[in-house]
Length: 200
Image 1 (cartoon, rainbow, N blue to C red):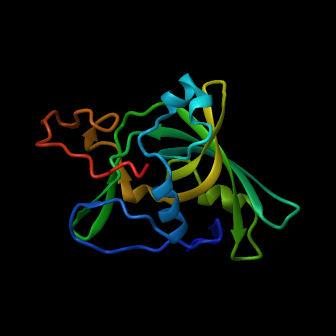
Image 2: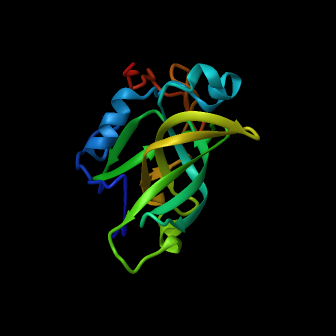
């Protein structure tokens, strides 16, 4: 059971039995996905931060580390670094289990500082670091703020943490939207289509 609320929202789970377009886990995430650009990548931001600093982006990243502290405002403040992975923004429902099929490839590191509210007064920063621990997936929405030693820094808008049992990086190899992809075993994918339409 989660002992934190990111952006004061508790994610909920949908059930289905087919491949679907990625569905946000909450109202605030839905708002972010609708207004942020899903086809802008870390490499774009590194090349021209000024061009993208006024636009929100949505990225998938595997958590590398999280450093958290208790703030004087009563909230827990965390800084998390991610390894970006290409994401087709689809949900693969197989035998009743939802999986996100990320590419093993991506465009380097990014990080954000975000805020968590405790739902249990007895937990602290160490529990927040465990909640957003290395190896988990995060869907991160934010505004490109700067590039720090090749790491893109996002100003936090929303973040969803997804457990290691809900995603993989060993089924499809693909890149940016519109580029071809293949099964990891080498079999070409038939009629690849991106399920996502850029909301902008």
